[in-house]
Picture 1 (cartoon, rainbow, N blue to C red):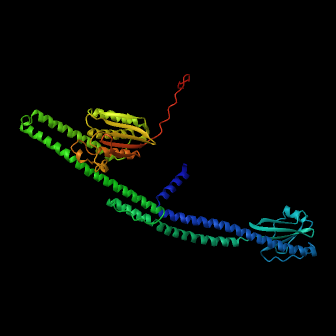
Picture 2: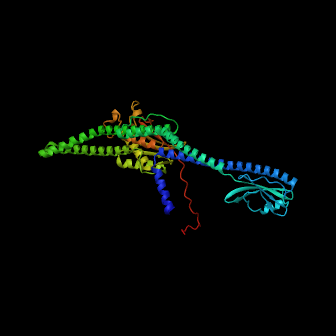
Picture 3: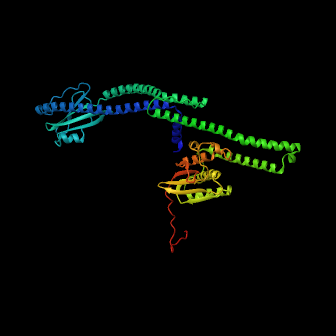
Length: 483
């Protein structure tokens, strides 16, 4: 909509949107009452008008029957007509020749209508019609009598309706004012919990105190809203607690490699400044120190990457797609072979389709293989098995190492957790926690047990999916040209 009407409507809409909810409820209540009063006035006025008209018509019929009786006795020309009282009823006699008689001093009535003339001629017994005279409304009743007709008329009296309308107007104004007051009071009482909820939310925003739950009050929608906000605060508390724990654990885990790296670098710098690097560190010792530095840098890089992955949580730009988990497992195994050529990997996989994020799943499988590669003896391969069991895709990574102690099993997938026997091995203790997060994000379950070879058996169950429908290929002889 454009033009002045559209601009006016836009300004009205903008004004309405800027009003508070309390003001809107007040206006709505007052408007609803005003509309109700107006509708009631219209209906009552119509009913009153019909009732008054029925009363006047009944009176006209009664008066006409009295005059018709007199006319039958004395004749239309000689019948005595009642004197005009100055207002109210009007009388007229229609003689057989079409002429009329009226009482002395009575105002003139409208000319005899065609329908009334037919009644006087015997076409029908009576007739009720309305007419106008000097901008006033009249009801005229015509009754056949004595070869002619008797007409009795009465001016329409609007004073009862006008008085009724004035009374309804005053009552309507009082109702609108009372409705606005009641609407304001109801809005204030109904929105009081929301006001307290807003104040509590503002207080939490200013103080950053997520431990202060908002008191549960009210019922219905208000209670559900408060519960939702409290649930959101609980989620924020958990998120902030997890962030704090992650930062504390990261600082703790970074302290040891950084300290070792700093000491080794400071040793090299100190010896180099003294000019005794070659004499103090023989070639073999220097090579071993540089290897240690390289390993520590690699460990820090891995730890930083895993911390970044964990800090991102479930937020990922990678889209979900239907994929063959066997392709993901084989790709992860190929990466593991390139990273650690010493570890032998034996694959026994079958095609199992699922809906997931390929990069995240590949990272989880790679972490499982890396974990198994640390423990598996050089002459024993890491066995990877993938199969379908019912509605699940089952992935098992089996090593021939010493296995996991029963005391360590409940914490295997915790962040930064490393068993006492694993502290001398490279790693950050984050690999399996990343596996747990990826599996949880895909609606799966990760468990640990002892394998038949005595080592650890890490099992992942993921929900399977139907394979995608094959793409229809044109048969021989079909026209495949693109038009």
